[in-house]
Amino acid sequence: MSSEFNLIEKYFVGRQAQRKDVVLAAGDDCAIVTSPANVSIAITTDTLVCGTHFLASADPAWVAHKALAANISDLAAMGATPSWASLALTLPDVDEAWLEAFSDAFFQLSDYFGIQLIGGDTTKGPLSITLTVQGTIPEGKALTRSGAKVGDWIYVTGQLGDSKAGLDVILEAHNRTKPFAEVLEQRHYRSTPRVLAGQALLGIANSAIDISDGLVADLQHILKRSNVGANIDVALLPISQELIQFVGGTTQALQYALTSGEEYELCFTVPEENKGTIESALAHCGVKVTCIGQIRPTGVFELDYQGQPIDWDLEGFDHFKAK
Image 1 (tube, rainbow, N blue to C red):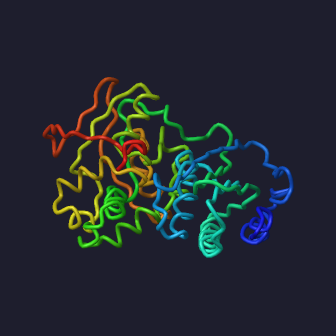
Image 2 (image 1 turned 120 degrees about the vertical axis):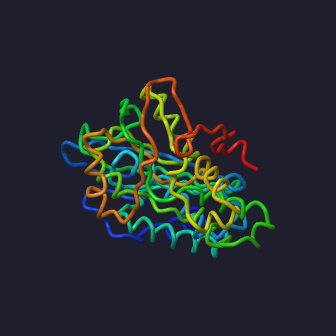
């Protein structure tokens, strides 16, 4: 049976070119990196647990993509440039076919974003994946949740709701017969972190967050930290035709868009004076941006449909309440 060190050497060491800012990578007690002057280091950590974030039968390549993309998305929300990663992998047993598919997909995504794996660990136990990913931001320029101002316009990237529909397919076998079930399942696992969009928003947006627990839940984090309120026109939410057909109607699709977790799109707020520059600033990013509402005074949280108030019972994604 392969030892811990053999597994690391075989699947995770020597797979990438050395970044110039990496002095010492995987293979020693610690990694050593350097950073240029006048930058801050952004650090994020996420854990994915089998049975909570993915099923044991899930494609290991999709699991690897999901695990890394979730962390990269956190950096994107702050406008950071991804740089380095550490991986802690807990395995119930040695499954070399699983490890090969997992590591291949991991390095495909990390290489795309210029991230070098600089360290980590493997151990025996229930299947789980913990990643710490670090990136750089110009000093004092990071996007945070606390900068929203009354009058800011609220935007989202991409389309919302597909990830929740994909989760329905994963959890309930009968949903596999619905239109676009396979497409939506893949979108759940294979999100696209909006790194370029986050970078383009530096100096333009006042606040930002990535949508990991659902738009309603994550927007509330901005509102709380910024001490403001919000009005959302639900009719403006960007939803896909695949989602509408899967759930059977626009109203249900809009409800999915408000509550879908693990989307990893960005929600951000922009002052009036910068509203006219958003589309041009993000033109090179290859992602659609949609204005969905406006920041209001604290204590206000309104959902309208084309100006008419709605009262839907909504709840964001919670890992401990998921099916």
